[in-house]
Length: 152
Image (tube, rainbow, N blue to C red):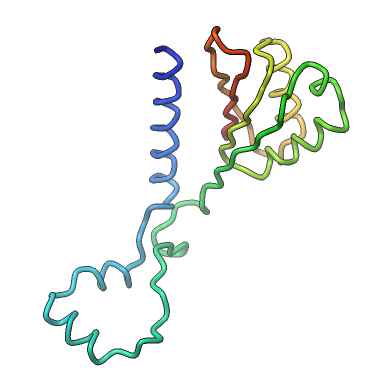
């Protein structure tokens, strides 16, 4: 139950971050379009050309505080102690983590706090200037496969 609460709160943080970043914001053109009178909309539709351009929900200049939030997941396929000690492999994984603001790492096969903490330190060591990652690891003792969330 504790793990479920932890993932539930992580999901809530993700949604809040998306809202704060402006990803869910709408352009003024879209707002004007959806608030029109039904009859006016119907008459405009009848007179409009079929090839009208799509309406974008993202307006990065007017109502966004920051650029979009990049969210991803990566199935590493059995990331265990052996892989965590291979520097060439870990540098590739760290570069993948740096592409995202929030990333879920699947199939982490160890919950050893020293190894996961070292992984986080390596990610932060080679992160772009001014970027600091944090990490949350699932903690269900009844499974031998864990997930980790890295977020800025």
